[in-house]
Image (cartoon, rainbow, N blue to C red):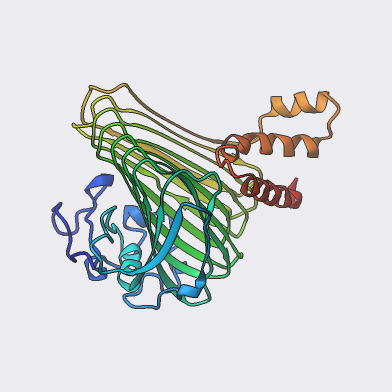
Length: 382
């Protein structure tokens, strides 16, 4: 296993760490306190729902709980998590991630080569007790592929996903959270992009009682490009949190972040915290992040916080935007004036709002599945 112990950064005993990139990193559970809402990293999450995912010891997923459907150009194997490859994309920054790291003795390694036009699938199932999982995705230099990590059924899962994109590669990684209504899922993604590589990272959060996805991208070689997209629909029983972080630490890199969600029902709660850091070495950076939330009913809550930290003025551009609001009355009026009833008009507005992100997925089967799920949810209130 990668070495334990807190890496760098000393802020004094008990001092809260507010800057995203200043958080300590460690693969040791003992280096982190139990999650608490007094910490910024857990400020919004209902920590009482972690269901043991923050314990020091619990079982890992069985190999049979990973379903593989790989097209030509992809291979998969289980490796020992002590191998030097594990940890090269990133390290945990919170207790749940460290616990999953420690308890997953085996890592599913997926290697992508060549150019594949068919998507590859890793289907993940879990069960009622807390489980840990570790996945390592290696996109070989100049490869081109789409990998779908599809979570379904019932489960309580803490998961780490490492992603390395080789020089000149182009990887689309789609993670789907489509659990049952009582499931808990906390997942940290660590991506390291090599020179002139491109990663399109897409989060689809559909169902689950509490979902938290934290994708990080390290752009530490020139010419790398990352696009992060997310789409989600939260009902009254759901908490959904996304915390993308992009670290620009090399010249002439580009990033785009766009997440959109719709909320309905009293108690529906979503959180989006978007962090972008442009370090002194990140000259020529071009970055923009956006979050939009559509509140369909009273009692729903969307927290949205974009953060941008810039250490050099030698950039192409940097910006962010965030907004949460209700239906656009003008759009509704226009559609109704064309003969549509109010219910149909409202559905069209919601579908149009989310469709921009859905079209980024690029896999028709998943796009149809998500569209059908949205239609079924809208039937409940619209």
